[in-house]
Each structure stands twice: as C-alpha cells, then as structure tokens.
Image (cartoon, rainbow, N blue to C red; front, side, top):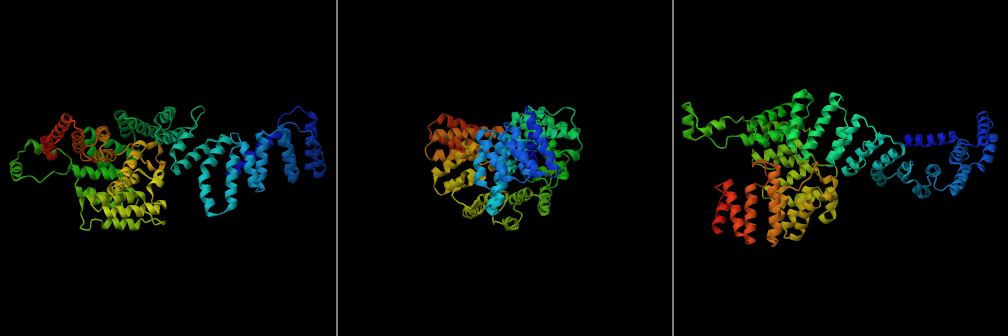
Length: 588
C-alpha cells in the first residue's frame, strides 16, 4: 500500500517538473542545473537552483525545484522554500501534499495532521490515511494495532479517491463488509458512469444486494453483457434470482433457477439453487419435486447445513403420522386400499434415521459450525439419548474460543434448547455468561446497538420474566421499529424482518398492560407475516391458529365481542378440535 501511494505521489512531482510553462529562460536554467548535477558538479547546480527559487511562480516550477532540493539532500532548504511558497499559494493541494509528506517522513505528526486538513476532498486525500497509518505504526502497541484495523478501509478508499484505481475501491468495500459494515460498503459503489469489468459489476451487485439495495443491484446486473462467459452468466443469473426473490417475485426467481438447473452441469450449480428450488416446491405443495431436489442436495452437498436441515425436516414431515390400524392392515393384506391409504402411499419418504445420520456425519466431519448446529437441533428434537444435553455440552466445550466465549451460532442453539426445555434459570445463566465474555459488558441498554437480533430478543424475554415489562417492551420495539439502528452485524439475513415471535410477544405484553389496540394491531401484523412467509404449519414458530386465538382474546378484552367470535370461528375452521377456541366461543 505504502509503496503504491509513494509512487503516485512522487510521480506527480516528476510530472510537475515537466509541465509546460511560458518562462523559457527559467526552463533553460533548470536544464543547465540538471546538466551540472548529473555531470558531477552538484554544488554548481545548487547555486543555479537557489537563484531560481525566488523567481519560481507557478506550482509546476516550484515542485520541480522542490524535487531537486530533495534529490540533492537539501531537505532543510526545501522545507524553507515550501513554507514560503505555501504562504503565497495556501490552497495549492500539490504544495500542501508535498509539505505533508515531508512532515510524515520526519515523524512530525502533529504538524502533519494540521497541514493535512487542507487535503480533504482533494486528489491527495489518501495522504490523510497514510499519515494515520504511519502514526499508528510509529506508536507500535496493541492499541495501535486495533486502530490500524479501523483505518484500513478508509485508507483504501482514500487511495481510490487519489488514484481512481477501482481495485482500491473494491478492497475498501471488502474491508467494510469484513468489519460488518455492509451499509458503508454499499455506499461507496462507483456507479455506472465509467466502464467496469464484468467481475466488478457482479462484485458491486452482490454488495448492494447484501445491503438490501435491490434496485441498485439490478442496475449493475443489467450492465453485464449478454455475450459474457458461461461462468459470468451463471453468477449473474444467481444474483438476479436472489434480487427477484428479495422483491417478492418468487415465480420469476424460480424461472431463473429452473434455467440454471437445466442449463448447467450439476457440478456447476451451487447448493443454494437446489435449496431455494426445494423451498419453492414446498410452498407450491409439490411434494415430489421437493423430495427429488432435497435428496439430490443431500447427496451432492453432504456438508451443506441448510440443505441437511431441510432434508431432515422433510423426513419428519413425510413420516407416517401413526401406525396402521388393524383394519387398515387387513384391508391392505386383501390387496385393497382406502382413499387415505392410497394418498399416504403416494408420498415419497426419507427414513428419519437416514436424515439423522447424514447430519451426524456432517457434524463429525466438523466442516461447518452451521452443520453442527443443525445436527444438535435434530438430535434434540428426536431426543435419541437419555442425557438430552450431553452432546450440546460436549460441542460447546470443543468450540470454546480463546477469549472464553462461544461462537454465536452455537450459543444461540444452547439458549434456545435450554428455554425450550423449561430450564429457564440455566438458560439465563448461560446467556449472561456468553454476553459477558463476548462483549465485556452485561448492560443490555449499553450494548443495544451492538447486539444481534436474537440477543436482543433474549434480553427482552429475560426482562419480561423478571417483571421488567417496560424494558422488555422497549427491546421488542427496537427489533420492530429500530431496524435502521441495528448494528450491521446483527442482520444476518439480506432482508431483515422482525421474527413473528417478536410481534406476538410484544402484542402479549401490550395486552397485559391494557394497551389493547396496539396489541391487536401487532397480532394482525403477525398474521400477515405468516401469510407472506407462506410457511407450512410444521415450520411456523408460532402456528397461525395460536396467533388467531390470542387475537380473539385481545378482541374480547377490548369488548369487541362480535369480532372475537368471528376470530374463534376462524380458528375452528382450521382445526375443529382446537378446544381453547371452542371454550372461548362458548364464553362469548
């Protein structure tokens, strides 16, 4: 980095001394001095340069003299004249940049910082970052190393501003993203006013897509030439499918995925395409296609955690709901089938043990923490072992980080299991330990802008359990209304939306504190979110029927008896055996 910046800077000085000027006599004297210097008479050449210093008027002339003073080792004289010229031309970015670099070289950092303020917004703004870089290296301590990490993205960005080298801009975006600041990475995209290579178009489309800026991402994708290589076209199609899916146009997104699945070799198709296609088939109720895609996914990508999780979930959902009755066995033995038996027989099945062992093998290979987490979820759900949490504690111990914290994915899994199993005290203790070691702070209010959504949600749950209703409400509201203020590290999904349980829990708190209208509105938002997600009943964190029931109770408490009765009737239309709804309807 430093060599490139230096080369650019001194290159400018070299060009400066060659610039065209009208003073022919001045140029002749410069040429005479150069001849004397190169022929072994530097003192004679220096005398000529000293005489010219008073006559130099334009920036190119002065930079040419300054460079020669430096080459002759006359740094003190060079600085004297540079300071004098800056009094006459204080706004010259070239002269200011020369002076800043001189001060940096001499490690006169306070003076350099004062002078460098004049370079902001100029072609030499990269020197500001270079100054900070040199100052940090000069301090040479652990705190400086952390500060250096913080200025790296800015250093690359300023280097781009000074050189217009697009590689610097992409490096800056990568560093911003690596520092979990995807918004800032997206904000520095160069636009299409200049020609970009195909790979750069895809790079910026991906960055913008990750930041949720879909229209801007599509402008870059639309700029990819149609005659691009097959690999570039494939990447363009993948990103376009993601963009269309993010805009809610699932049909158009799936059309692109189908084109990829049929137009490229299986080895070239990334697992996410199969996964999203299987998800689309699930939404459409196309069980056979879903089965084919998931079995292919598990076979071709045995360590792809989302695919293995979907594979396991399908195995559970497709498993026979109950053993056949004696009558059904008799009917089958006679060569006949009832309509329900015939329907069950058409469902392609994956043995639950097969899915479990696929996840188990992926966890044992330890190629992905995500695979480990999905395996733990499946193991917990099946409860194959009497010691329910033995595997979890083993994996936690194996994955303990050097700072005594746990990977967030694994910690989230542990917290969920403990609370789901009714071990609230242990779950709270584990969560507070995780937060303390991860953030070196336990006050959720102080940490709010740094926490991941699941961490804020857990703090809200704990506050509610401790009777701190106002604090719980404020945390839930932050997850719903404060998306723009969430720390960039918090949002792992490309297009963040508040989880349905957050909407329902806040509605419950509003209902319990008499804010019935606000609670009813949130229940309605939760129902809309379930409909938009189009999740099958087995996938929903809170079933639609349960949200309807809670909505009906809130309507009853708000004395809207007629609407509450309609809501309970809607519950019973979904499941006539839902006794809570039937009892409330009788009460109404």
